Image (cartoon, rainbow, N blue to C red; front, top):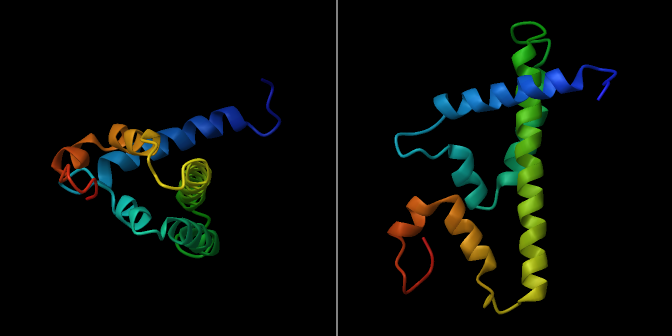
Length: 126
């Protein structure tokens, strides 16, 4: 693709930036605080709040800091992920209001098998 604004290279740099955050932001249990915030139902507000924070900070703290723009993009990606998961949950709920379809639970088990191994199998919750 012949990008006009170097999007291919910039997306690759964003990926490298995001990959690097996985080394630095994990707790000893390999969970990011963002995961807990999302699990509590505050993911969209948290992610969008951080987008606003880093947009407003750009050019003020440490000058026109390129890292602030990467953080804006990373939190926007997280917001997009939260959006997609919420839409999928609503779709699944409309298909199966009683929650008897195991698709969503199976998907969550694949994402975080270490949590599901510790779950009480009788209650099917954390």
